[in-house]
Image (cartoon, rainbow, N blue to C red; front, side, top):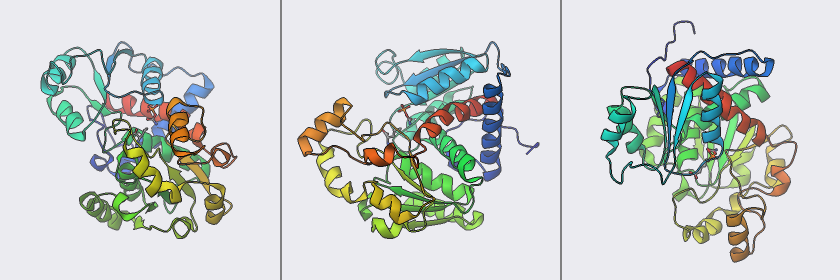
Length: 330
Ligand code: CP
Ligand code: NVA
């Protein structure tokens, strides 16, 4: 891994990285995590500055970028969904040229992947994708670090993604699993499987890495022998409220509950990128719960709170892995 150098690279999608480069980022994450726990300073980017553009809301990703930057010695400027000119009064290309003349790195969370790609095209400094409709690559690094910590390896792990697999999490997990030699299964009605073009690309990668990809609409069959059962909210940021009804109807059979966990076997763990609607303690959860007569959506509270749930380890690992991306590319 000594020959790997990611300096100056963008981090837009895992399709752009080799399995060796992804392993390098995971190793670096583990190293930076150990340093943080041991109180060993690692201010390797002292004096640098990064811009955080968020056109959608965030808890984990924003905090991870801010804390990680500070730990590396860098300053941050946060541009919130309402407080910048981006897209409304200033084009992406102009924004990229302005910001990259002031900052050493730019994080972008927003809508289409084409926007973050354009930002990177016009930026002189590295651009990091903090989530688009299509991909959420920093999340996958955190997920894979968590799986590696729990199982000791990635290759051969069977990861079953339950729910809307057409969106950022389903797409990114499929690509990540293909790159790193996992057995990926998407379980949902077939209209919710990742699109054919991306699947074909992932299949090609899988053929080289020993990964397998499968698509199974029967949830009990899908989880047989699973090591990881993964889900995400049924309605993503930026989608209209009216799709809740259709999602609840289509995806209820794919809710992660104890019956499903038990069908997977004793060693199976539960993962979720968060935030999650596993109870009525959120505004939207309570509103949709009342409207549709449900107390839980994509995962039951019992599974979420169980010992088999790795969600908070996974959330912590967002920070260590985002730090590795910045440490390596700045
Ligand atoms: N998982 C994740 O990206 O969380 P946030 O939306 O809180 O950043
Ligand atoms: N699919 C979700 C992921 C949140 C981390 C969304 O885009 O809202």
